[in-house]
Length: 314
Image 1: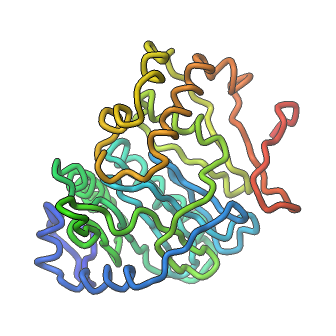
Image 2: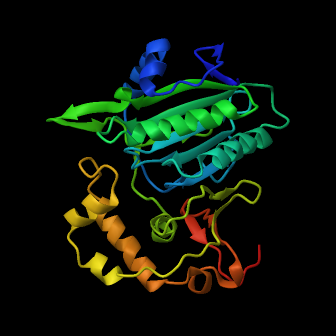
């Protein structure tokens, strides 16, 4: 009994987006306000990009990050947790897997980063999960709401741009209005966004999902100020050559939960991921030497993430 909707503590969790908007129509206004913000195209400098089944948390004083963000969310939902007193932010890209544990991690990270700052509320914002024909987005919404509702901390839902509020018609097909968002960690501003760079290690990070990892990976060590990937392993992919020989349309139809509305880079990105898996059948050997994570630091000259060589011990 800790989810707060429109300022009111809730006994029950909304079963779906329709119930939420019917009982609390103010969320329609909040979504419209987000739609009215000009979308931004964000480059790699000062960016912490969060991929599918990933999360990250940072505080406003973090000198390595200006923007934390995610995109390519169709049936997925981007979740932002923010502490109003300190400005500490956690962002995740959820597809329904590993939500319970990741929600606890997000709230915990934000609380840790808020220590020593003025008291404030834990605010929750949801963006994505358009109204797809299979109801995948609704399933993700319900799993997220249930996880936050079960949490012992009081959490205030301040944005729910999901379901019908993130859906438009293109011809006769429902499409997402917003595919991605960025958060300015210095100001707390949240805005529609797309990202020119989704790295580092994009193929490696996507390979983890492609090969069935069910957990949500925390990709940023705020104490060290470094982006951290892995370590993890997966079994070799059978039939990689067969996958690679298929058309982009085949990959789209068989690897997406929403093939009609994926961005143009979906199939090339999947192809690059499959090729990476083919070349790295045992990442514990070829990528994560000595079972150590891959750490990236922010380069002062370029503002981009650069890999710390394996010889350097963290």
